[in-house]
Image: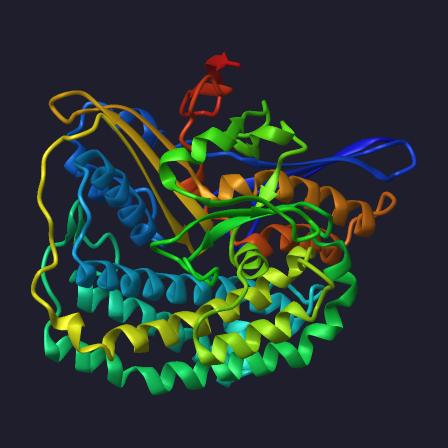
Length: 474
């Protein structure tokens, strides 16, 4: 008989979501949906706010990746102001973004995904967590904690707070770096290098055990989008957009923030509060693409730092062309961390980083502006319109997790069709379906802002659980 299987909530994710599987009469999965069950609404309630408040307001979208929203929002505001920020401010922002990427990736890889990789997809859920990792492999557990602490401590030193720092503002940053803080950051580097070296070595030793998962975890041809620098290398903060197809051919190149919406559209589906971005020339859903660590490594010709360059060359040998399997997000995430540590060393070893000119000032010179940055999970776009007084009249956020939405749904179906069989469900089956989502490290609180008319239901429930009234939209 046909049946519906619901995994609610999906565990070890940042936010709230569920997976729905539908089987046919032969017990085979015929449909699969990843549903984001929360709604945030930042696009709408930012209307009427002064544009210069937007970075700190947008940072409140997420406690894991607030820096990405700070930077993308500030860049959108700078487009409205028509200013170029001081060079030292740009370097400081880049370092802050790298620190956030490191701590966020450490959370994803070590806390959320390494239990599957170390203990196995079929391990008892009681043990399949960060505490189980620390017990079985204390060195790996300490490396994860150490890398997350490294990134967060740098954020705190620069921005005065680990979560929601207000240091990044339209025009640059609020204060320059002191020599004391610079020296403290440089002193943290040896431990960080040792921790990421341990993690990369361990991952490459165990990766072959997951060949089957690598073949069925959202492994299909598709496009990839990310930012590259002027030299076509990795870039997280001040690059331009590149989109490639499944063969590596470039579809769009060196696209700046002001024109991203010329080629990127957004669709909605009735089963989720998360949007479905797509490449307009191919339409929806054929124009779906992926962003994030895997996309960044696929589109970049090189990393631009010595250790990450070596790892990237090795990574690119996994495929003849772009690496298509989303399982390899895990590997790419570790290379991102290594690159981030090297970039931080480069930035803080430069004597000009102590320059005191770190902010440009201006008023409203344009009524529209867009900004892009690479968040840990992928490319992030903020797009604002203002009135003559500088008040926001319209805002649209294109979130990295949303850009992976179509791929996550396709991946859930692919994995479910491979692992969920018959009328008997086993823990390992469902965990593999969940693990597909974990490879993308979605941030669901970032991703739902309800642009347009999305489905919504509100239930009024009495203290005894009785449903008194229900309203539905969509």
